[in-house]
Image (cartoon, rainbow, N blue to C red; front, side, top):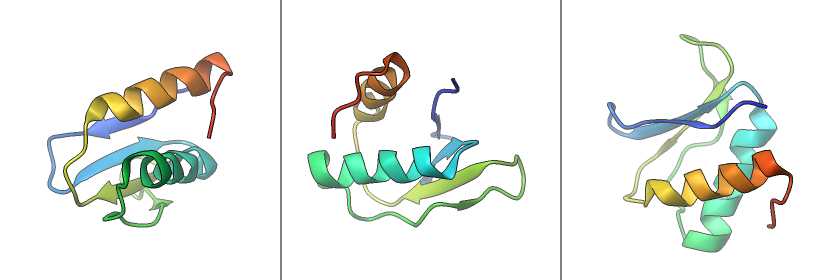
Length: 78
């Protein structure tokens, strides 16, 4: 399984993954659990392949890291 990548070197911050459903699930988690609503929809990443989404508000990267670790271990709870 592949981790969600967070690109902090750009504005707005972007998240990347080969699977669109993983990006959508991550965005849903951020919205429901942390009120992160200023974001794009998931879309194809024309430069690197896979999919990406942009997040336009400040958020704690640990939220995604923790969610992704649970997802990869098979214990994701939404």
